[in-house]
Length: 393
Image (tube, rainbow, N blue to C red; front, side, top):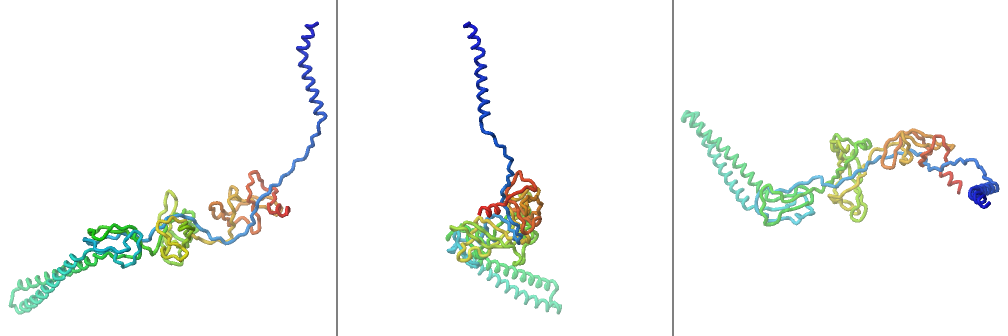
């Protein structure tokens, strides 16, 4: 009997436990709350919109470059000698005017050479006078057959030699005068000293550079521009601009002297070559009198790195939209009067950064959806954010 009870407890005990659990589960489900089935809610997305207002837009092209002088050159000694004086402006950064004497070289030897050349000229002139008189006498005697033809030819030859000697003496005087003038190194233009390497008492040789100079009448900036941006600028890469009124304005900006500064300039020419790797053309901007700006504008210093805004052509009937408004295939989402989406192709004039310029495809007063709708479909109903704000108000 005990063995039978042990067998029943071993095999039928788990069955009783499982059956009890199932019974309790059925009771809980039967006595629990009923689940209310509700129909799916159609959610209408709220979108940001932009009302179309076509306007006249002047295109601009951005570029960057460093300021350089229009003209720069080396000041070179044209005669040899000891330096006797150097102008106060002959220091790095010094300003000078056209015609200023920047360096003087000892001229005594050249004054002596000039006097010697003048003496030779006077001697040659005297020889020529005597040769002309002798020739006239020989010519008269030849006509009367008093002398032979060979004596006449000899007098004519001496006259030709005297003429040649006079020309050589005149050239020597001219060269000696130029050498005297060249002992004074004169500024060729209004400018500034980039660097100098000469002091009083120093000996310089003919052809030796003594300073690097640059002009201050104009400053230039070399601006690389993409070839596709040239379509929005009123200039040609073929010839330099000759009409001052036809030049393209450019605004230069840079942080300088403790603030954000602005300078006005013009595009005066374009380099004729297109870089085959970068597909860019270099435009040359000029600023007149860079060191003589108005009181509230600091000078446009050589070496400054600037951002340039080149003002281009005006276009009428242009709509500006952010890049988020565009779909693939140059289309936009137009919100119709009944608040539904219409996918419409548009005519894109230009893409710059985050702004797209449209010149066709949408009409004045229409609304363009600015919100990105990855799952949006044409004809889908939307709710403009402005309408929601008015309702809440």
